Length: 59
Image 1 (cartoon, rainbow, N blue to C red):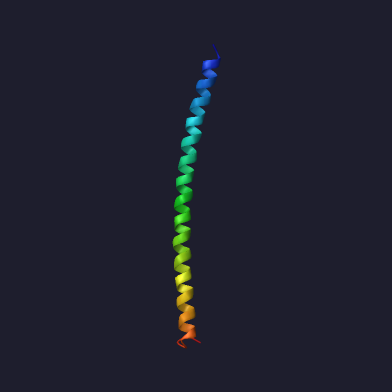
Image 2: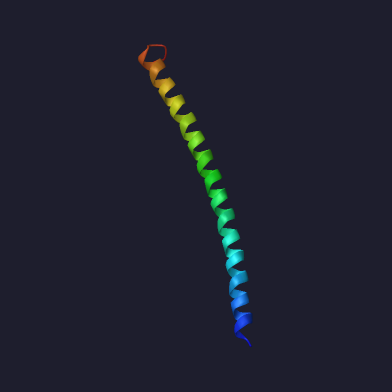
């Protein structure tokens, strides 16, 4: 008689933790996208700086 309650609790807990994991994965993907965007922006700035320095525009 207690077993269905235990299995029901396990099922509900699994659904809750699964939803939380999906939410966390979405946040991680968003953070990775932001990191990639700023990495590209920083890289472009560095390459521009080096090109200007190599061209003699900057000392």
